Amino acid sequence: MKPMSAARKSISTDFTTRQVFFHAGTRHEKVLDLFLYTFSHFFGDFDLLRGGVTDHRESGKVTYPLVSLVFVGVLMFLCNLGARRQTKLLLPTAESLQTFRTLFDVDSFPHGDTLNDAFMLLDPDQMQGAVCNLVGTLVRKKVLYPYRVLDKYFVVAVDGTGTITYSKRHCPHCLTQKQNGRTIYYHEVLEAKLVTPNGFAFSLMSEFIENPGKNPTKQDCELKAFYRLAPRLKAAFPRLPILLTLDGLYAGGPVFQICTNYDWKYMIILKDADLPSVNQEFHGLRDLQPANHRSWRAGKKAEIKQDYRWVDDILYTDSQDREHTLHVIECVETKPDAAGILTESAWRWITNVRPSQSNVVALANEGGRDRWKIENQGFKAQKRGGYELEHAYTAHPNSAKIFYYLLQIAHIIAQLMYKGSIIGKAGRKALGAIKNLAILLLEAWRNRGVAPEEMQALSSRRLQIRFCPDTS
Image 1 (tube, one colour):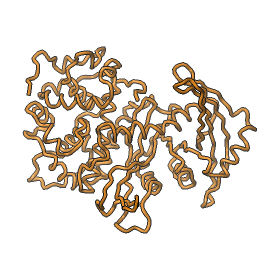
Image 2 (cartoon, helix red, strand yellow; image 1 turned 180 degrees about the vertical axis):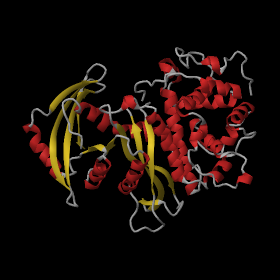
Image 3 (cartoon, one colour; image 1 turned 135 degrees about the horizontal axis):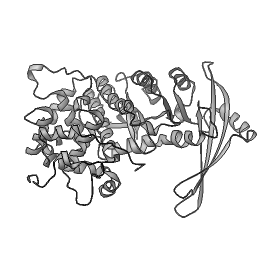
């Protein structure tokens, strides 16, 4: 391993309020400083990673503090190692051990099996609390305030995704599906992610979609998982002003009622085949309310034309005879394709926010349409961006959930690093894809040893971090 350059600036002088983090020729060692400073800036010390998680190991046999194991798990995902065994093969060096000792006062580096053994004993709900603490800290510090819709509501997208698939039963909780005469065993999770116009997708709450046993009379599903997730989300963030953005699966009385009970706003896709009475009333009244119309131009050169129409106060009675007052917004968008030919697309949403000339564009563009960020900046990034969400990091069901939460934590940190003003626009251009940040972080971890006095100097820095526009 090459020794660190003596010409490298110390942490205490490496950051200035006017200096971007990356520039042509910047050494990769700086990326570790970026990681440590970003976490310290937003969250303080690394104890927040474990939050209120109880360590159930026998105290007399513990070599590594639980927070150090959680840290290694998060670092595994941040560096895109792709497998648990890689933590022992790629992370330990003389330099990295110095940093690990500085952070956790430990003289050796844990094996991936050590992580797995410890995580088997943890309470997944408590680790979920650690994820909530991180995002809750960003909310309390008003880091995400500029990205609220109508200067009030945090947009929360809810959707499900697959995680792991097996040819044989993995555990009693596997979901099952017949494919070409074979039974496929798989796991899914329902995610509530806080999404923003500049491309953040932070996990707020996860609900695992799993059967109660090997032979259930009815399988678990996304909608059932939402009914479990909703009260947990409300309990974790009781005063957070939320606007849910959902697909058409959720267009129904039970979801409307949950949102009413919890004082949540929503934008839900309304398809032609859903809620026939609501669709019929919308089409019957749309052209009779000419005042409920607004045209809008979007795009860098105003090349996109959006035509909005809406109908207020549509009464809907659900299957349990509960009445709901709904509003429907329609957006017809015309824009040129790559060949310059105009193409037309249309969207329609149900909402419990009364539309108006002043808010309809924000509701649609920053509320309803931002639902796609849970797919692109959320699931797609975690499956194809190096986090390997669909890889089985362990065969133990309980430990698998812990690793899932650590992946969510790593993704939160990586987004804060990549979009922050320390890197800057020039740095992002030089870096390219966010995935490249993981490559540089791994090299920095292996080559950059951080001494205690350097960590203290880094933690004492007070710089303002702003975030870039959408870099997706």
